Image (cartoon, rainbow, N blue to C red; front, side, top):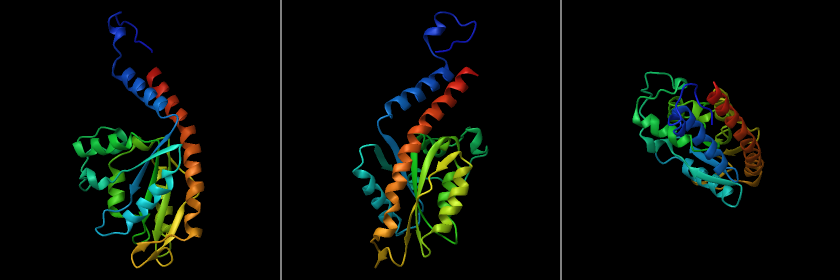
Length: 227
C-alpha cells in the first residue's frame, strides 16, 4: 500500500478512499480468477418480444462450462428513464440513484453478452438509452454479441460494435446470428445448428480475452493509485 507524505502512523493504518478503491478492485480480481463473470444483457424492452427466448438459450449454452458464471442483467429492472443525467457518463459523476444502481451492477462483471434484435437497421432505442447512462463500467472488458432479425440482425450487431468500441470494450469476432425465418417457428426459438455453432467459439474467446483483460484493469488501477 502506498501512503501520502505527511500522514501519521495512525493515518497509515486506515486506507484513504483512493487506496480503498484500489484494494477493493484488487480483491475482486483475485476472487474472480477461477471463473469469468459474464452478464447477459437483453437487447430490448419491447413487450412480448422474442428476446427472452434467445437470452435463455444463451444462458443455457454457458451452463455446462466450469470457467464462467453467467447472470442475466436486464436494464428494464433498473427503471431507467430517458437519459436524465446532466453530466456525461464519462465523468463518472452520476447524480441519480437509478444510474448508480445500473452502473454498480455492471461493475460486477468481467464480460458481457448482448442479445440484440435488429430494429430499423440498428439496435433498440431502449438498449442505446441504457448504454448512454454509463461508461467506465465497460472499460477494458470483453463482449460478445448474439443477434437476430429478418436478415439475422447483422446490421444491429455491426452498429453495436461501433458503440461498444467507444467504451474501450473489446468485442470478439465470432457472433451467433439468427434468422426470424429459419431459426424461429411459430414464435418459438428453434435455432439451426449452422446458426448456433459460432456461439461456442465466441464463448471461448470471451474467456481467453476476459482473463487477459483482468490484468489490464489491475494495472490501470495501480497507475491511478500511484498518481
